[in-house]
Image (cartoon, rainbow, N blue to C red; front, side, top):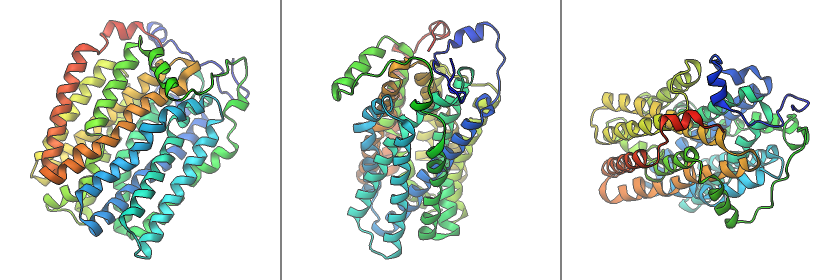
Length: 437
């Protein structure tokens, strides 16, 4: 049964059945839905703005304080709210209108960009200002993350859901990687103050569109089981138990969690120092190219994933892509050649977006509908919350042994962990083909 605006009431899909019937691959299938096009566009602006702010503020903080530890603290303070509150946000999205939760996130994001601009313009920026704003920024991301993913299921029809999940996952991780290129361009063209003012405006399209968007609980038709009340930490344990028998969900949560724990995108906070060591640390075209190489790789991966029908979501493929990503990151960390660094960052961007978006797609597509928000929240704890500690493994450890050593050793350790998980937990091809979300 479908809602009055095309949103499905029940979106459990048997993907294996569709494959068995020989359903042809449709490139960008979800973009055929006008509501999803607007939602994806608004998210794309917001995702780019999220990362753009970090590029500008990381560079300003590095120039002002010259502290790798501060770069590590920036990652720590930004991702800690995801670790603490993602599961609660997912549970909340099961019970209330996810549109309003996302709007709260957009307002908090805009506040942070404006506050950074004012502090930089008045030359009043201090370390404690940065800590508070990064914490608020992290909380904004929690309001946006799991609720924003839950809302997808109210917008598209069942046949479009796999494409919609892949596109949103792709755009989210592409935003994490492409945003730095935009931030470097803003820094070069407008300077930090005006760049942050413009950045604040990029959150407005999604904020305004959600105000009247005809999706969410009010527009669902048919009978629905009202989710149980949130029981705090006990609820997280119960959700984990509920999906513990689903090997695909478990393996993808562990994959994303391990990658986020040790590396994630923490090396971007240290990019000013990597750029300096490569001879291109000033905010010029060469420095922008370092950030843009990551983004170019992500963009290429996004186009391949959806348009060509290659690298379809598969647990074993996700593990292999993640292990190749470790190799690219370790090689970048020890590289002393600017040209080689560009190539390796392109490869890292391609591989990171590929395996992260693949893992998120698999989890979201296989999550049971009644607890979808809770499962997405649990995945967010692993994929985003554990990034809290990558600030320690890359930034704070780099303060003692150097960021080149900290990044390369983290990549090697992650490679060993993923190889073990691949052998022990990765579902066989037959298991994956025979499963349904």
